[in-house]
Image (tube, rainbow over all chains, first blue to last red):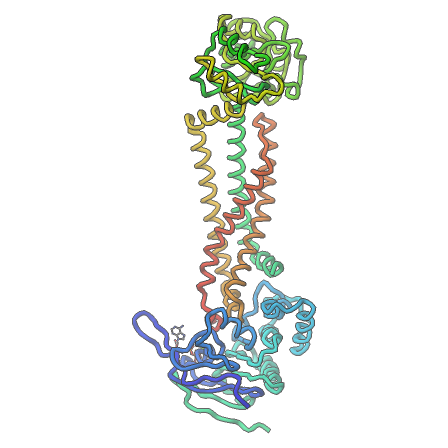
Length: 230
Length: 375
Ligand SMILES: Nc1ncnc2c1ncn2[C@@H]1O[C@H](COP(=O)(O)OP(=O)(O)OP(=O)(O)O)[C@@H](O)[C@H]1O
Ligand SMILES: [Mg+2]
């Protein structure tokens, strides 16, 4: 099976004044459908940079990032946005729900962006909320919900478009351990359903959920570990 | 998107209120100044507007209806004999001082035209008291209800003196007011009498053309054949009067600069408040970009908010303008806004709020989608 996301000798440099910061040295990796990949490493090691490359929010300085057969370096900003919308679901450390919108509207948002008909969208939103056990909070504003609840709504928003890829940056870092457990179980279930799930973390306790662990250190991938889950 | 825009606005109530108040204040100031401008220009041309004729004929050097020169009575006969002229109505304007029993004095213009036509100042629909026939009585003149304060409270029946001669208010009008002096209308003899003017001059001649004749042709004929006079259509004479007074009084400049000031102030109040409201929501806009909204979508979301702000701001602002209009009309500052002007107010509201939104739009467009991963 060919990987859904490929990073091929991709690097990322940032200009900061006169100096150039190498956030990621040329690195290669891939994400496969049905697998949960952990990206582990210390702070500042380049985890988020790697995830941003796969997430099509930045272009590689060198090398290639290929999402579902499309090279991101060939896309303009608008097409990149389209790729993100259609292929990738995002989950963030700070949940990033739109504060003025209710839980339901937050989940609806990507479907609105995709111009999906209202009736179809409603149905999908309902299903997504059921999946994360949050149907009872449909009309709540984000600020009325706990961190764990917000993160489950964020997961519902990420999966409602049925993207093949889910990218999560520290999804459990703002949660207590019970909520973190719940969120990780949901993410693993999504992987089992066939999505490629990548999770950036520096929390070793998430290791048991992984099918594969990519270690990032000092701007490069230092080790890749395949875990044989039963 | 309408729903989202509305919820963004509702979520940040304080800022939204600030934006709406900014719009209300600037549209109110603009409306108020425009209203006063309309009132003043109406007053400038009031003499012409409140007359009825096909053409005005005045001294050839006169460009302002409020400062008429003198026409020799022989000119009146010459004008009468021009082909296409059906009937002439001479007008005499005499300056004077009105003096009241309670000690009030006021500068007045006594304006006379032939009875019973009374082609100037005494339109039926503007008369609210007294009978027009009563103007035949000794010393009888009309006065406007809204000038009562200037005239020491004088109303229908009040006796007073003009240039030391006995006068009485026999007809009361409403909304026939001049720019500067107070208008008192009567017949020609009395205007001459009060102003001590000779029987050999008049101030202007109004005329009707024969039925089926083009007034423009008659105007040109008079201008070609009668020396020392100038014939105008009412519209042209109004325009000339307003232009002359605006450019010689500084009113156009002062009201214009106030309007420009209100525009600029509104633009920046609204712009900065929208900008700061957008900064408050910068994370949300970043998230939108991160999950795949195009710049176009986000720009539309902000523009839609600006549009909704203008709808709300305009509705309330116009309400205040109209309250102001009703309020001052009780004091005699009467003006109306045409649908075109009201529409222009709305366009101005749109321009300042959409223009104001441009600061926020610029900021949001420059936002990197990658920002979504940074706290
Ligand atoms: N936009 C940017 N401009 C300049 N430097 C950047 C930028 N983004 C990241 N960096 C730098 O690149 C390096 C890697 O950053 P990155 O965010 O990928 O680390 P990380 O592994 O996600 O760290 P953390 O665990 O703290 O989130 C850091 O030194 C960081 O300061
Ligand atoms: Mg990071």
